[in-house]
Amino acid sequence: MRQIRTLEVTTGLFVLLGVAALFYLATQTTNYRSYGGRSYRVRAFFNNVGGLHVGAPVRLGGVTIGRVNLIRYSMTRYQAEVGLLISDHYDKIPADSTAAILTQGVLGEQYIGLSPGGAPTFLHNGSTIHFTQSAIILENLLGQLLTHAGHSGK
Amino acid sequence: MKRFFALLQPIWEFGAALGRRLHFLVTSLALVPSALARPRQFIEQLFYVGSVSVILIAVGGLFVGLVLALQFYTALSRFGATSSLGGLVTLALLRELGPVLTALLFAGRAGTSLASELGLMRATRQIDAMEVMAVDPMRRIVAPRFLAGILAMPLLAAIFSAMGVLGSYLIGIKMMGLDPGVFWSSMRHEVRFHSDFVNGMIKSLIFGVACSLISLYEGYHARPTAEGVGQATTRSVVISSMAILALDFLLTSFMY
Image (tube, rainbow over all chains, first blue to last red):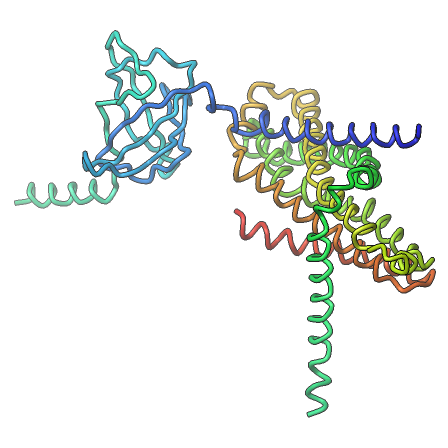
């Protein structure tokens, strides 16, 4: 009887230890909780999102404050709708802030850069960022450059 | 014509061997609910498969973490990127080394004991005796061990990886003097919950199924002699290790 008891206790300890390790790895070493739970959603509409993808960082002055959690095309506005999940620590972002799709480095990952405006009201859960700047598409830029060069040559 | 069939013989036998293992797998899986209905046996097996391996796994994980951190530190310092040490070590542990090394250690520690135990039962006619008494040995012996093996593997892999993270912390912060904030935040920044953590755990669950299946099959079908038991034990380690490494490649190429 005594031996069976030790066996059960040891097995229980093993399972507890394993579950604790699972929990620790999931919550402390991954991005699981970084922006989950304590964050709010904001929408922004862009003419062109370029190579932006879900999970891309949202930065304010270079500091990551959230993630992109949704990209879809809005058939009512004929623009791409981007959902941003911003951490609750940053709840005093002016409502007239600008969102731009920027690129890290020359060919790096694309992210959303916010620049604060001056409005006395703040972005809150469900609000929309009205001032946006789309991704810069290299092909369009080159095309414009070429037509421009062609016109000025005449 | 005869010669042609003789050439096909090994392929035929390979297929038959695979089929027998598949049948064994399906039968054991079908009996898993009945194993859950008898928790005492299952808990006992979880002890023999899991609890006794904890020390080995924990020490293994700690040293793997220490070595990984040292090696990555040297490599990263040449690129001036030691700030991503934490993320790199954790990625390596969660995605690859945790599940694979745990499975290999498990095959050596728990797999052999399963195979030799069942082999000895076969050799001492205990399995035959059960069949005579109308007790289904698959239900009574194999199912609880199989379930215990499947459940123990992800838990052991988690312990391995957590100890590895501890090891990398000791090297990175305590020995090399990296900034703790940078170390931990690189981990959270680089490691994705779904694609890294969850997939690693799925991997180790599949390794658990493969390892337990192979060990139990080899033991259950051991030749009933002293030599046969020894061979079954050896085969269980050899086949398990090869299966783990091959499965790992397949799973990695499909998952990521």
